[in-house]
Length: 214
Image (cartoon, rainbow, N blue to C red; front, side, top):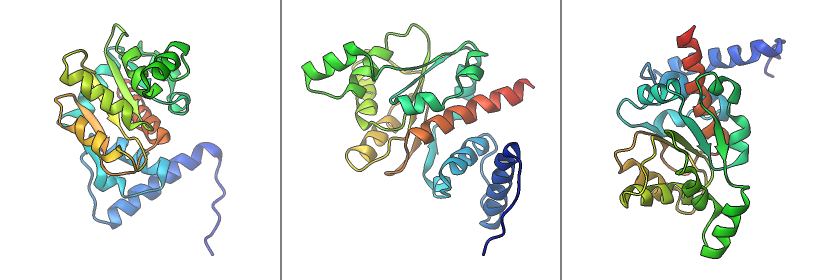
């Protein structure tokens, strides 16, 4: 039987990261320094070490994402669950806001008229934000597909894409499309992901900025 550790609430996360670090060491896994806090927080959120193999970063992705946050970029999620998980107070300290347009009445109306998903239409709505946007997609592959289409058509270019939708239909293909573009990204290959993973990546980036700022 596993021994119960009696910890204060604020000690639990610290202990969790210690366990993750220890187990990675035991598996002889050394994460790239800049990617380490992001990958570890995803493992912390999911208790799934497979993300070490599947979480994929474009060249200088972490540096570019941090720069965007430092300059006040906004974050747009494809679910209210992901939105609720993003640390909006810390993001606001850098001048950024977090948004989700899934519940917007106009989005719902247009999606119904065009027989498409609200996630796809919400990406179009987000493209009207007049500042750089980091997209954090954890649920809807159609959101990634619509972003890809807008990039290809020259309509809009996201500043950064976190592509981690979870599921079985079009999920893997949608992620591959984003990785074919020249837009910086953090994408999880395969079927795994989710709104909690999208929020965890956003927070890992924000927290690393806070630590850097001291």
